[in-house]
Image 1 (tube, one colour):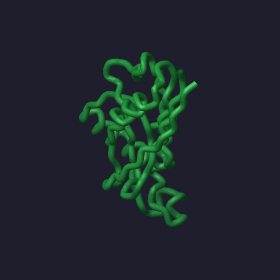
Image 2 (cartoon, rainbow, N blue to C red):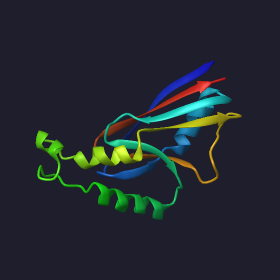
Image 3 (cartoon, one colour):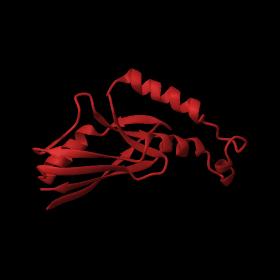
Image 4 (spheres, one colour):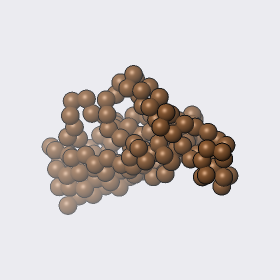
Amino acid sequence: MKTLTKEIWMEVPERRAIVSIHEEVERLVGESGVRDGFVLVNAMHITASVFINDNESGLHHDYEVWLEQLAPFDASAARYHHNRTGEDNADAHMKRQVMGREVVVAITDGQLHLGPWEHIFYYEFDGRRRKRVLVKIIGE
C-alpha cells in the first residue's frame, strides 16, 4: 500500500473566491505513484469548501449569487449570533456547510477518475489570510 499526505497552501486576497486546485491534485497523484486507489481533498478551514463541478465562469457566478441569497454577508451582529463573538464571518460558515468540506476521487491507472466536465475547486468564503487544503492519497 502506498500513501502520500501533502498540504496545499494558498493566499486568497479576496473575501470569497473559487480557486482551481485540479492540476495540483493531479500532480500529487502522479507524485504518489498510486495507480489504483483514492484521493481525499479536504478544506482545512471551517469557512472554506472543496467541491467538484464544471470549470465554467457562468456557473461560478451563479454559485456566488445563489449562496449570497441563502446566507448573505452581514458583518453586523444583528443578523447572525455568531458575529456577536467579534467575528464577521457567520455567512462563510453557512456557505461552507452548503458546499461541503471535501471530495473523494477514485484513482484508476494513475489518473483521477472523473467525468468529462468534472474539475476540483477550493471555494474560499472568508479569505485574506493563508489557508490550506489536505490531500491524502492511498492505494496500490
